[in-house]
Image (spheres, each protein chain N blue to C red):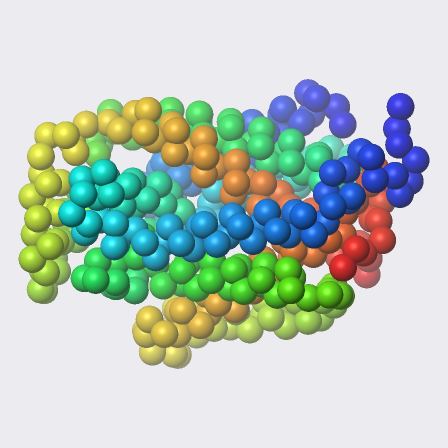
Amino acid sequence: MDSRLLYRAAILGGAVSALTDAVPLLNIVNCLCCLGIASGGIVAVLYLRSQGINRPFTMPEIFRIGLLTGIFGAFGAFLFHYLVFQMVGNWQIQWITNMIDHMAEVPPMWEDIYEKLQSPEFQGFAGWSILIRSLIIFPVFTYGGALLTNQWLIKRNRG
Amino acid sequence: MQNPPNSKKSDPIASHPKKWIRIGFILITLWNGAIVTAPLLSQAKAHWLQALGSGIYFFMDPVCHQLPERSIFLQHLPLPVCARCTAIYLGGFFTFLAALVSRSLKPWSKSALGSLALLAVIGLLAEKLHVLPDLLEIRFMNGLLLGILIFRVVVEALLVPVTNHGVRKYHG
């Protein structure tokens, strides 16, 4: 497979994964089994197919597509998380505290969590933790997305 | 130089398909184990165990909305993924377990996979359109169905390797 084409597909898929992870509201799509992050792998495979590769991909190829898409996605997510943090602050922590605020009955343990979340250490940008987490999670799910899409295309072509 | 058709040298999965099923089973078991132990670890007395539990919640944040009202509770804390996601991964565990213990695994037909997918989509739509009550149990069952479907396709992909020359013989 042409490396330039592979990198283009991985960057495109990675951008889709990163956006669905970091952008508020858009990340709701991950409610369904991490569909947003996995969609990066789906997009990468479909892009490669649209570029004229009509045979099914081999396992090592799918592994490379998923891994590269995940790595680009992880760095993209880190960047988008940082941009979102600069614009609206730590919205995820705010979202959790708002949710606890609106709970009719707050269990005692949750009150402790609520207090902890108010502390300054939770108001900053998680930075490296986000990058490390994404570098583990993204390749697994983009590989899964690429694998499922390839398998679906094989089944469809078999008629 | 390209390997001839049916050569197993180029594809480690083709030469040891069951090995990859075993690896998949270990990974999904660890993942399910992390889901179940996170609330317990978060309440442990040792600080490092608490940190490990919190770490699992943080680690699983991108993969699920983690809404408490849609999650199963264990020891007063929600699991780090919602009921549907928990069931999806549980479905994956059972699918890999079945693949591991089965002597012969035939690929499911397109109509069987399609019917299962249709059932999952109908369940999801019925729940979102309030045809079915908004119950944790229904989300769990729907997730289990989805999990079996998704991971069955993954298992089949591991058992039906593809070469540069097309789909190879089924290994199961």
